[in-house]
Image (cartoon, rainbow, N blue to C red; front, side, top):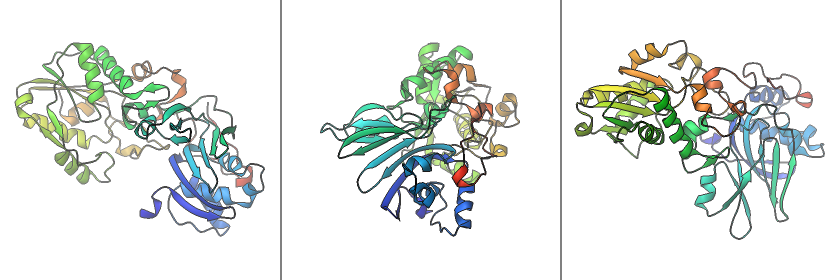
Length: 384
């Protein structure tokens, strides 16, 4: 819906505010119901609008720090940027689910962005991450910082940012994404070696991991699948028919490279499986002799409630299916997913600092039972 496009711009007692939000709130429905029962009108279906209603509420406006008071009521993932008439405020949830970085322009002005690559594009220097539970204020007076919450005992940095979401040129959670993805591919080669003629990426998201696999295995890297640059990400398409059609448009197989070859095909992840199956069928039709599929993350068995557009549990191919059952469905000769241990071994920070809920089901917050107290008494509930 067009009304949900960000930034959301609203007026309240203190003037106008524009808000941009990366993440997802698990208690947005409860908060929205609370405000609607009090007569508030909503213009969108976005959970971001709830934040504006919180900020504008009399309870928060009477607080010494209205923004900090409002943020303490939120449960879930949020990296937020607020544009007020006289300042910018940037805030990150106490669990650190989504990245948020502070930068400085050559003329000394400060900026914030969700990824460091955005700072590179505008010629800004990366200073540091906005810390979990921190609010950073940018104004004519310079930069200041305060806390609205302590960092969670167990952080929940989304490991899928490194697997798929983030730009390869970005530094996310202290590591360059391209380097991490190559290391994931190298770990795949260690965990699941197999003789083959070529290591081949599934464009574009499998390219970095495939390069790492090829380097670690010594098997030549070849690109036998050419992407159509005018077709977007297929797993986000709403229906199987649309996703299948998008795959046919998106990928062309080079028969001269594939025909009669034993291939190791590397992809970043499998969500529903229908698009991956279509890709494998294209390779078979082009004459691939063997297809050994390698995935640079574990099986996605659980939905994400914190900002990744994964399907409901019963739509995920790995939910209640064995790897062998998935292999048969996809029509490949062998299938190996990177283990959770192998994936986390490629990360610089302690393993317990990363959210792996989509693989393990270990949610930091209970997505099905958010706190239901009145807004004025809501406390963050943490599951450690």
